[in-house]
Length: 339
Image (tube, rainbow, N blue to C red; front, side, top):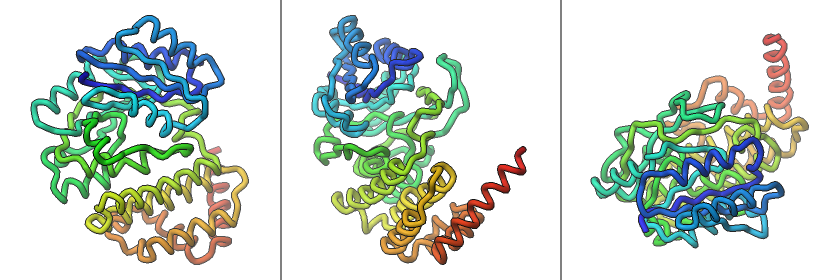
């Protein structure tokens, strides 16, 4: 079999979101493929919808039900263990793709010898094939046989996993199973999926539609999700050590960890959580300093971090209490200015 498309599903029955995703998959132009849709213990009609598609498309659609909620990482692992395709593709169950996306990605892989191929995506707020805001997902300079420079670039700017296909043999060989029971599983494993490849090809074409709505993971802030992002950062470093690329790409990993574990968590927590806790913010800053004491001197941090963020981070590193008071006043002032 040429391709296995893995779709983790959790409570996506409302508003036709799941059907729109699945319709784009069952109508793919690529030959000899399967869709493995894994229901992650949904409490709505999601699994019934999956069973309906399995009945209508028995030659290509498999509906699987997990008795335990394992989050997207666990659902992906179930799908990968069942997959028979030479290539693996992932898609979020509230997104959709062009009819020829996988055919084009596989054709590029076969014509170049790549074991990793990706494209761009577009942001959309409506269920249609109208191209929205295009988001370049990678860079032309990253294409080709991967050397140290290209791998370093992929760590810094790897883009999303859902707009890529991966040679299944690479996943199996390196044991690239996602962490379960946490959000942000892609952040934990993304570097391994990219760095361990031998050849990457990037297609400058938006073939993936990323649906924008308030319930998606990236738009929902809670203490649990902040903690999971931190755990994803820890796992990212463990993965780099397990696959022996930690030392070679230490500057890139240090900055990636700083951004994922600390910067993103610090500012989304402060802006998005109603009852912020001093203990959480203090522990976050202390662990950052323990893990990478010189993170503020990292050249990528110096180049890529906004000056205002640097100022706030210096403040938090010196005094968590002062930082929290200042941030809340600043946030209140900005909301007042918008009125």
